Image (tube, rainbow, N blue to C red; front, side, top):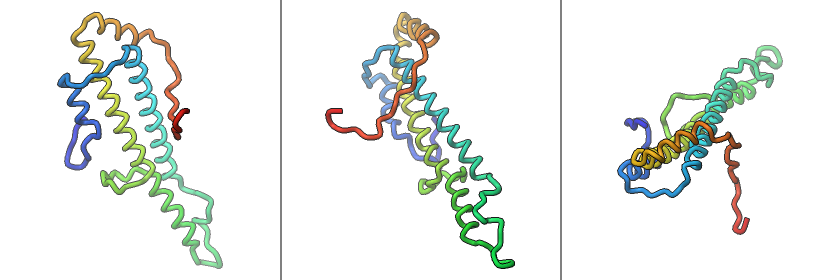
Length: 163
């Protein structure tokens, strides 16, 4: 992932470097690497879907809140227009790399980048494992092709000790 002056460094950049240079140890079956990669891709696709929906929301012309009506002749319903503008602004991609941009689109983009980093980290580790051992490489390719799909991991929102 490229890093320019406008983007913050990857939160996992150090771990990815450690993995590339062979100084990180991860113990997983190759099967788990396949599922992790698939889950990461699934969540990235879901994030892009949410961002697409938010872009559609921001482009919605009529919200039926009274933003196109006037009250008592020619007085605008300013509050309706203000609410619609705020919701549009919260939903759309502003194109800003400003860390204070807390639109739904920007927040989802930050989540996308973290998932992408995890995917890169685990791919890097897997590539080091399979790059050295041709048997493991062949086994991984076979698993990637033939391992059945499974439902993505269900995230736990709350975690309580003992549960």
